[in-house]
Length: 132
Length: 203
Picture (cartoon, chains in turn orange, red):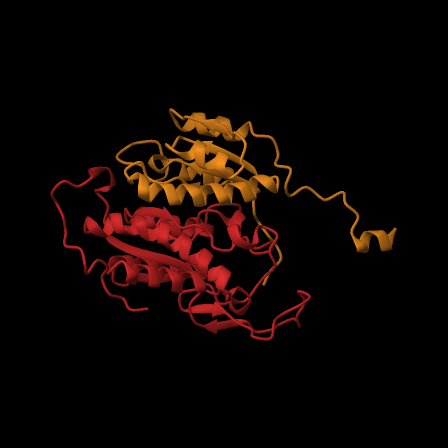
């Protein structure tokens, strides 16, 4: 297994309509690929509450793990029930974009600060203490 | 896994359907990390975020994409060690997978009830998402160090995939077609995989 990890430490919670766009609706996948963001998909609006609820619970639990570790996590679009699910998992309010067009998404992602995850740790490990 | 059509229990229902999900040849339920490589075990991310070779094929063919939750991420977290199937094969992890599978099968059921073609896309070599190849080493334990070149790939299915099939069966939904992405196998070839995916989706 290789240890050359290519992760971006950036995750976007994306409304289904922008991931599976219909007709000529806004499609964020090419933008997110280009900007090097990972995706957590939000349940389709068409799903009934009893289907969407457990899926949102999973979204929230995974989001909490990324947020706690200093990954940059944002929301693109909206999903009924998301705010409550995130709050229940202890995730504070995330920066959110309601995009009108691709330029909105690109500008929003470009303006994000560098995630705190992925920066070299200042904590001394056993090996660095020995070397010192 | 059998390559049968899904939805034995449900006839097609053209009346009263929710058309917001219509107009696609099929729905692919894909492993979480295929849209988000940040969920991988440290050292395992093959690209920054979206694994576009799969997404490109699905979109070229007009398929709808549904992301499944990562079984390992919410259970052992981002700082988990590389692990083999035996390390995850506990009652607690299976219960966790059952909970995830129940949520996913709820969504699968929506599509099956409307007669849509549903497929699953797993990750070959994964202890939880493997389709035909998982990772196995009954002796692996303790300090996470093992001899270089230790073999861990083995024929078999991941634990989450097993629990997902059990949940589908419990709800009377026959086995969907399943394929595994090979990007973490040593003999992975992108061109071969694309051809394999295209053939699989065209069935």
